[in-house]
Image (cartoon, rainbow, N blue to C red):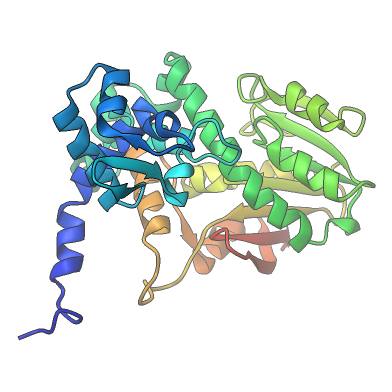
Length: 342
């Protein structure tokens, strides 16, 4: 008989009950319970009254959140927010609130219910569930779109800070951030490298908050904003083209078009810098499942995929490029991949 330490049952139970835990966390985030409890110790009765809920069911919810380490129960029926729970507070810098709200939104979870469709057809389960592609849906649902943009910006900020110090940007004069959204990545890079100029490029809707981001950072004199479609063309004469979490959103056919457009637009001896997850060739023991779940999420919601180094090499060959150098970005789960003409 397995000893308690070696038994697989705890892991099995975590997996089987994981869906319930997600529903509990989703409700807590949607209600902003960590905000409501704040920095104080609060009792279940007071929290329930604030929401117009019954005390008994609220106590049970709060205890479930304590078991999930979002809350602590220092005394019977009284609760405080843990460091984990504090990451879900919407009123704190670096909050995971937008990401948690987005990923647990009923729209997103409904698409996952159709995962089998993606396995059978290779097509996006989201499109099958809603009759429209993911970004088309966002364009007509501003609340979810706002959550998506906020989640992407928050995730990008931490990665860009590490990237700004880890990669040798000093070799370049102008970096073109292709698909750069609100400019979060470019702000971090330009702030770290004062001699570098920037061009922020995305669709008109993608850059709608970019001017505000650049103004807040005092970088409008060093960076211009251009709009367009990276499947058609990108701004010319940059010597570094940055694509952060862009290529993973597309299959090889579409991704190769983006890369070719960047290569054509670059100055002689220009480089393309990808910032993406780099999957190992096999799933390693103890490997975090996050990248693999993200990979499935890209399948569910669109045409994208995470890639191994060999996958990236094959993609680059289709675009007339090769991998020049690869580096990791510690504590982010991302790598940078520098490309040059083949």
